[in-house]
Length: 167
Image (cartoon, rainbow, N blue to C red):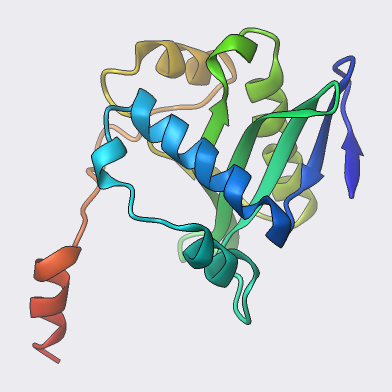
């Protein structure tokens, strides 16, 4: 499904299972930019299963400029007990470096904002590395506010497996 945008020659489309190799390449490019490529263990097979399997845990939209994929957003729904409504968590927003500055990332994020509003969601949230000043400035320019009093916590790997045994 093609989604027209206000940017010339730039369209969005919902990802399909055939896009899993492309999505993985974008994941790897983003991880390299974030200096976290060594942490990527996703594969085409895991993406096929988790994005397009019996239970789709997340969704992705691909940005195409003049018919070529140049970026993507990967997101899923979360829930706010305070509002009693769903939200959208943006896991990845990525535009290839040679295509930045053209409004494509902003367009992808605006699409998610529109999707959130249309679905009755009360927020769109994401994380950004504290050293990524260009992205932080961009997020401030669209009205995003930092959650200064909140710290992300993670339980994974051996700690996750070990703690699961407590149940």
